[in-house]
Picture (cartoon, rainbow, N blue to C red):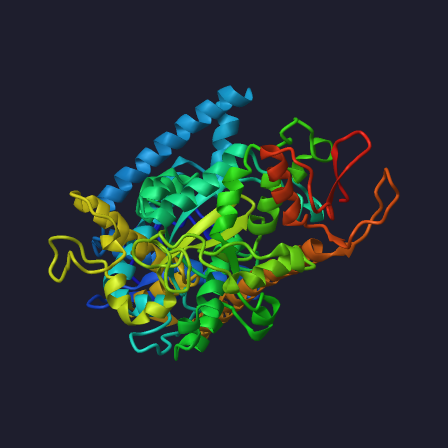
Length: 609
């Protein structure tokens, strides 16, 4: 067999573990039992030699290492010998890799000074972190890493863009499933406004005894009032969101169901709360022919559905008004405190805990509060909102259901996470599947077929810079690439079609073993994705159940002064306490109803909790 002109630098952990030199030509010095021949060529290039095969055949991860090596050699051959040109060619990649090595040397020098060690110690640590032996190996590590990325990008953009996008979306324009090898990502495009409030209590108390500051109470009201009055668009209001999305007008980007055995990095209340609203509480979507497919793709099983509240929580707009009115009330008109000045019993915090300290999704309804005087539990009062009169008919941003919407008519959904209150809008739902081809189109201004008036993810922003549109298009491309954790296997199967691979002697049948390995990995990754999503739902629904238990638990107690029994109470303080104390702050006239709020002998107000 001829000596290959290709200098195949073997830099993966597999090769490093075999202690081969980092820059050796693969030749016929040792018997090659796996080779490939490029089409149009008679030269065979060695992939695996007999000694390498013997060293790893039968080991627990031997087949995966053979796969890694073959993929590496095929990718490197495309660049070094065939002159592959994606976004970078080989010479550009080599120059980039040399700069990366230079930066690593500078980092080693900096680490040595900071850690009080030697340059050699820190340089060795860097080499070990990349599983290479020397500077040449590190350079080749960077070369291959960039080659692989460039080819992945090309493969996603040029070779399988349409097919990958169909699998990513999960539904075609008719609502039929496009699922193939992996679970679809079921994308949502989301905007939000965050008003920060970290959990102020721990354990079970965080569900009913949280506190917020006067500033936070006013901020919550101001955001909702601004939206309700239509003074600003949702995007304009989101410029003051207390997270990094404020720079993009609250645009969170593309949210997917992608998870793993350890769950998603996005907070459950945000992502799963939106799924619950869109799939279970929106009557139009529930009747959609594709509803069953969408819910299955989002992990919403019957068990999940049964564990979630039957209806979405409706928070009255009046509660936001009261939150603002009560924000600074901590004493009555004579400066007497409530319950010794306990912050959890400040009127604003009673309102906060009842209406907003909720980890399940809520909508904001243009309604007055329920009549609490005839109800046993504060949580039951939400159920009475539908029969109440409109709070303020002059407010323009409420729809026919009475729900707060943005300027486009999208319902604004609220939820509380450990970070605060999220006000969220679904810009593109899975139920908009008929528009997916347009909405997730990556064409840019100036390209054939681009429509500047189309409703799309790319057109969400308006800019004079094509780069801004390109960044949006890249968001789509990257999301499509990342949703399949077995993406490299697609690239491997493609590269196999560009050459003739021969497995012989001891390696005969290895090709089939690699194919079986790839198939098993796809099945395993799909399982991990499904289990990860199921774990997210389990964690979320169990938290909601714990929240309900702790807010509704009933008890009685005794007045420490008089010894009399209290009324039947819940841990969630009755809203009447907040309202009555607010009246006492404005007018010191005695209360006519002292069921919950009474005087102690010292003259301060006493609440049984």
